[in-house]
Image 1 (cartoon, helix red, strand yellow):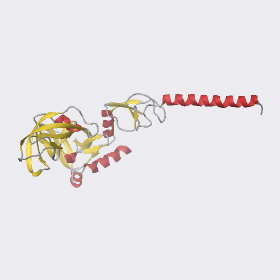
Image 2 (cartoon, helix red, strand yellow; image 1 turned 135 degrees about the vertical axis):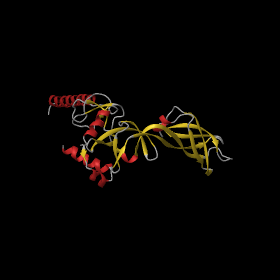
Image 3 (cartoon, rainbow, N blue to C red; image 1 turned 120 degrees about the vertical axis):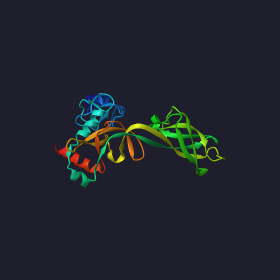
Image 4 (cartoon, rainbow, N blue to C red; image 1 turned 120 degrees about the horizontal axis):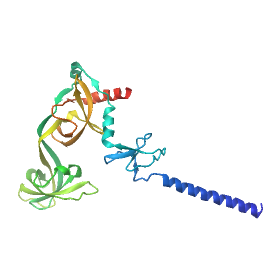
Length: 278
């Protein structure tokens, strides 16, 4: 093989390599970035998804990384409502309600008491620092009462009030430090000993429903609402704090509604089957 032929082959190989690198670079440019595309639920009020691959959730418009279709915008609330609507309404008789062990519960306002667990350490004989999860932070403020006990005197209760709430969330534990003043407790408390207790929050005149009425799903919390003629219909609700056997309801129900309380998983299974077959 002469030098001319060898040079031609070398030139061809180099050209193909350059073209390959250019094509790969262009392909990478078209791929959505990892920070914009995920396979999990969106954290905001809207997200973009692929009509063919609904597991794709993006924070910005773009293309599906699987089929390259244009992503469409979806509102989280609409997605949750669609999930509820995928459950068919169920017509039940009084006998069926009795056999299922379901109770017809009227929605009403009531006074609720919520307890938020806390743990921390004594800073002095009169001051304690404890952690509160960020999900509970909206309900915690200065002036609220707390109670608990020190590891040094585990059988001697103490109580006090919150004096301050930090404004920085620990990125590892997702908690916020809260400082409390001890008003009543055993004598001889020692600094740096551990503390465990709870914050009691009184919720006056709130819509409350039994814990057994709520079904927790991957797309939200729902209840089954009684409509005319003993027809049960799935309804997405927004919950507040959980109390002793009850949930505070922030949105989705009004006073006077009737909901199902009891083994709602049986109703939900039937509703999903009928919704799939419709």
